[in-house]
Length: 329
View (spheres, rainbow, N blue to C red):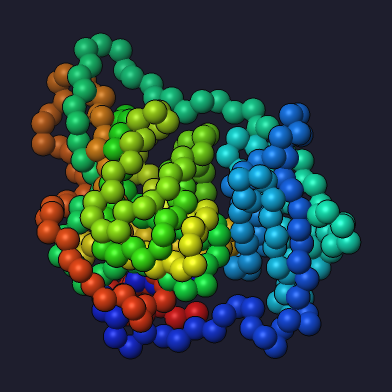
């Protein structure tokens, strides 16, 4: 799978599949099941992959995985990383993996002890108000899409800049321009915004939903997950599973300046795109003192237009954009 953002579908780059026929003889497959070390229950949708190599996947609903390892690109000293919300991350050298298990390896993950994310409200009179932040849908030539060969765990994300006020994230919106897939299983990830790349997740629970909508505005309620922020944050969509024989999901992007990120596979390195943003928007609840000055909120300026465009994405293959210039591998 490739993520590419373009202003138009013309002059698209041609990509070769990572695993081409010439490397079949050099390819191994690491199979296994990921379980909770205390309950022995299988863990679904765990991220597993070779760090920063574009080789990764997620476990299925029964905790199973199959990860191809190409020996022409992956060395014995490269690192396999297994991570999941609420569990301690596991790292192993590729040279330490055992490929000879008949039924696959069993990886046991230990629950992580963590402090719940919370906001601290100042003493005195408080008021709350609703505020939409992020990037609304508008008539833009920029798009983001997933198409072709898929890599589970691939993700596209956008930084949301807000004023420094404690707030809860409520509804999350994004806009589907075209969806040819039967349905997709997606995970919403929310990260702290004070790191160079998405790194620290703010939710300690998996936020998973099935996308069936073919076109139009999608609304997902984050309120039950009690996610609070007091500064900039990053929100992303991660691919967990494709139902059906094909994938073709095209989302709207924005002409307004912003910062976006993408990675091609689980545990892959992030790439940053400055001055670009997906049209991810959120409704938030702001907690502030009653004497707060109205009109000082400097959330990103966004415009709204409910007329959705139909586009021809038949020749697109990925997620890219950078001021209309295709990013090339």
